[in-house]
Image (tube, one colour):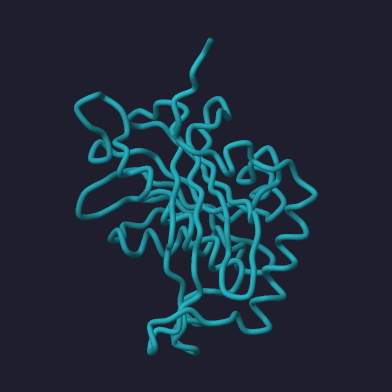
Length: 216
């Protein structure tokens, strides 16, 4: 066990590393302990099996993050503000992209990235300051230039689903600023993850739309 003090950018980088399952035999579990200009974390080397059991959601989705809610993320209602759910889910998007190969190295090597085209957030449970949540991701579908996925946020204390965010994302040529086909290696990774996820229960919030249900 070791304790370090790092800036927020360093903390987020470490979170991305553990979520991707690196290194091969062990990875670092990173836990947020404070807020402000500096963040104190504990890093504990854990067996990958132990991490997988702890970090994966009940439906076996990809593990894509963990947060302890700071006071800065709460509002006058005494709970996590709607905007910061999107912040947490956006970090989960980066962790998911790392796992399918659309990482910083890919962007620098190919000058291609992804842009969000559509988001839909469903708020299911209040989340309060100091509560710990973890995030998982399910790949709903993909095609030649798009991937469609949904993130879920779970409270650690009771494993309840707190929120989801469904995302339609486009593969973009950053020079042309236009959509572009996935390269073969990314297509193969997306296909593999999609096949694995088709064997799991589909999140019931997927495809949901806002409406007023009229009751007779």
